[in-house]
Image (tube, rainbow, N blue to C red):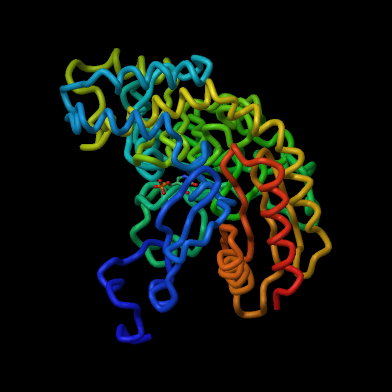
Length: 440
Ligand code: PLP
């Protein structure tokens, strides 16, 4: 498409993860948001079936957050976080620690999920080194994992499309566990599928290959989101935990999408009752209002640095680590989680939501539906030679019909704000079902 076919004023912005030329020929513009809805530039209300990009668990325009950020920007607009501090950064860390049930004693701030992942990987490497295990440098991710777009996250990530362009630039010393997706055995499962816990044992093969003394960390998403909702098989995460402990390998849970209530518990480690060593978060931390990520670290890991050489213990950090506005948004979000019954609502509607998702079984092209908490993945068969085209068509039609869905390949992923009600669930799946019935 030539630039003359674009709508005026759209050229300068190079949009992320977007077919820019398609978009600019036929833009979808969001201009405001409130509660469960966006509004587009034609004034249409669009029901948010995806909590933005998984990052608005409390719904849009949460008044606690709006007021807190307004007050913060008028008081302390920015404060450096290198060798200086400000009260809300410390206050938020204490609150986050408590929100983890005091299982993670320390919090390192970042600006995004990608930065959280790279931070966690660097902490893992530095931890082994500060304890005198400098050979533990190898990192292990998983096929179909998504850990953001930094070089570290991309390297441990396992989505081919994200890697192929940058293949020679990926960091060295990374291996991958097999993914756990199994359509033959596990299709149409609610919650954790029965088959696949043994795939965690593949870690033993990697240990045999490289030796545990060379492996720093394993990173996995407890529930893989961006690759199309892959729920861990029963017992899989527990087995991974056992093997990491056995071999002295740190286990990192990437909770960028599962953190802050997505599975109806504060974190996925609560839901699965499996405790990793390091947790990466972002998205729900500030309800998407101000960009922020946070890495939670077990006390023993942090202590190892504090017992190391004097001076700066970790040569890592960001200009926007612990930004005052983000901290204000984070504190207000936690207030909302703790005082507004958000997880109670998520628990109360989760079965209804999952029933509604599974009611689409049998519609044309639907080859799998998988659900957990307030997440649903609906996998469609692909049009030959055109992977992703069918789901993309559903996405565009859904938007025009007033619902926001997310697609990855030919998988539709739904992850609405946790404040959704039954009527809105009916609307979301009712409209999606009608679209699927007529999709080519
Ligand atoms: N990790 C996971 C599991 C994610 O789902 C994402 C984003 O979707 C990221 C990391 C990257 O987060 P960000 O886009 O904020 O860098």
